Amino acid sequence: MVAADSEGPRDPGVRQAAPGAADVHWCALPFRVLLVLTSHRGIQMYESDGSVMVYWHALDSRDASPDSTQAVFARGIASCGHFICVGMWSGRVLVFDIPLKGPNIVLSEELAAHPASVTDIASEPAQEPDCMADVVTADDSGLLCVWWSGPEFKLLTRIPGFGVPCNSVQLWKGIVAAGYGNGQVRLYEASTGALHVQINAHARAVCALDLAPGVGKLLSAAEDTFVHIWKLSKSRESGCTEAAPLL
Amino acid sequence: MDRGGQKTSFVGTTGAVVTLLVLHDIVLTMFNKSFIEELLKPQELYSKKALRTIYDRLAHASIMRLNQASMDKLYDLMTMALKYQVLLCPRPKDVLLVTYNHLDAIKGLIHDNPPLLHLVDETFRQLIEVYGCLSAGEFQLIRQTLLTFFQDLHIRVSIFLKDKVQNSNGRFVLPVTGPVPWGTEVPGLIRMFNSKGEEVRRVKFPHGGNYVIAPKEGSFEVYGDRVLKLGTNMYSVNRPMETHTSGTSKNLASQTQQSIAPNPLAKEELNFLARLMGGMEITKPSGSEPGFRLNLFTTDEEEEQAALTRPEELSHEVVNIQATQDQQRNQELARIMGEFEVKDQPRWSASKGDDLLAMMDEL
Image (cartoon, rainbow over all chains, first blue to last red; front, side):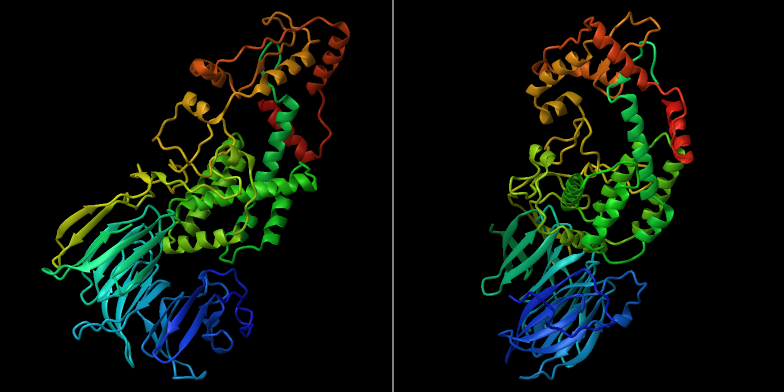
């Protein structure tokens, strides 16, 4: 597990700061695996054995003036096709185009749909022909944005928040699973944004969600010291998502 | 100053005056307008070294002097207490309520000093202005940053160990009972909806904890009921503990039972005190001679209240402190008692002297 970020070039324009947020993710693209790290200084991408840093993206300190009240950081990483998406403190999502091999990584797009800092990004291969959603992004205001990835990303649905950050998000079979700061776990239909399941799952903020796609099991972990496992399914009659508690 | 058979606090008048002086100077320094303005500027968290320096300066802004070991212990205590309060906040915004509890308690300590009160109220207003409209997400980041600062600190604090909010390995106990944070539902319910948004099914599931709904939200105004007990005086008689399961029992007796076990040393200490005071002459209480009645509570009312509500199980022997006539010791004690009275203006610097006199006039 890579820990130190001292290998990156130091940008003198970026002030030394206590880390506001840091994230790490194995991006398993169809043709290569990259290790992506984020911090208050920037985004680093390494070959899967950690030997070589193939890309460094410094956070644009010009966006944050010295008097700015905002902490500067990158948070939320997901891969989708030959893209890697990384979320920003500003709410923007950076989309990087990854070549088959080598360091020629290019920032291809900046998605500007979130008014608050991005918290998490999730993706899955596009499902049925009628459900093209394959990326979902979440932010501090609880807003969820569902995207269709492509040479240009397209915003399909916006699922509004309710005053509480959405800390973690997963995507499975066209279902968006979201864990919130008030302990709730919610399941939405990705294509329409309709709420299908609302679970009063935890007494404190949900920190993380994880999903086993083969069996449709969702795990939620929260600051109340509990971990829950839920079985997700789609009702045959209505086609609506259901959840049952397993643990 | 107390005279003529009236009761006086055991702290002793000199001790009380010094305490007030120290409090006054520290509050004056801590809530200095420029200092607060500097603190409230948007900036990163101070480094550990910087925080320790500020703390040392604050503590020594008064006539109080602490040696290195005492200073270290005090700083450790402060750090762990703050870690505890930030960690156990039900929701991130509650760190602001904890801060307001701190300010409320400080105002209680200096309540008879209007200029100081005004300083603290000013700070209150500035805090509301700077932090009052931050979002839940921003508070989450603030709390996370604070917790990172306290990471890997596991110093054991005796009062926390005694109250069982800290384990012997230095880790804090996270309670799984009590009220849920404001804005959170009690866990245990799954609701399912159809595509029209109508609820079609409800499933209950067992959640490991034992939670109840939050009674009300704490106030974020300058004056108000904070509801949250984190950040209130850890050392007050009715020590609030976050691990209690019952609702809002404020019964003095029950709380005394919970937290204070009978101290076998107490009787020995009182006997020792009796021997020390043995040479003192006690005349009839209505006379004009100085008398001395020991009151272990802060006020007469508290003493009477405690006597009324003292539960049977905790009844101890009453230790009577008798004055025995011993001429030699009598003279010595009389001389010491005489020194407690301040007849002349003390030789402080001008401003300190004025403050001291003003305070002593109020005693």
